[in-house]
Amino acid sequence: MPSQPPSGPKGPECDTTSGKTAPNKAASKPEKKITAHWTEEEEKILIDFLATDGKAAAADGANYRKPVWEAAARKLGALPCKGAPKTWQVCKNKWGRLKKAYWAIVVLENYGSGLTYDEEKGAGITEDMEEIWAGLHQESP
Image (cartoon, rainbow, N blue to C red):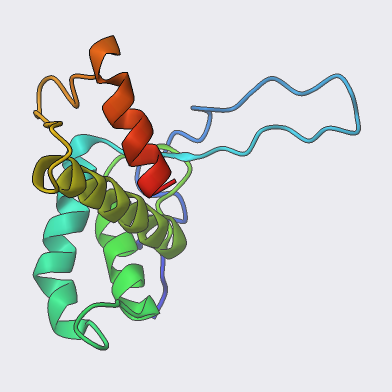
């Protein structure tokens, strides 16, 4: 089964020029790699897919195998995209970053740091919180 959507390797309208840098004049330095751009809607689609379709296929109840990531990439590949295509590896890496951000927020909210997180205001970091942040950084660098 192909891991790319039937409309082509870059999806129906994948704009691969986004994020591209001008060629470097020094021949020894390669151009910057084009990266995938994720919208909030695409992140929600990935999370919903993993929570529903992917959950049943999770190998050990926690980790997803390559076929699940390939299916997620096909689902996202059917959408117009900006930047590099969302391959199975890109989807897997994005999931890892989303989990890391989620657990950082859980720690802020629930483990007595005195800090909070708000969807609109973020962590609300101010200078008077410097001591708390320094302590958190020492505990989990």
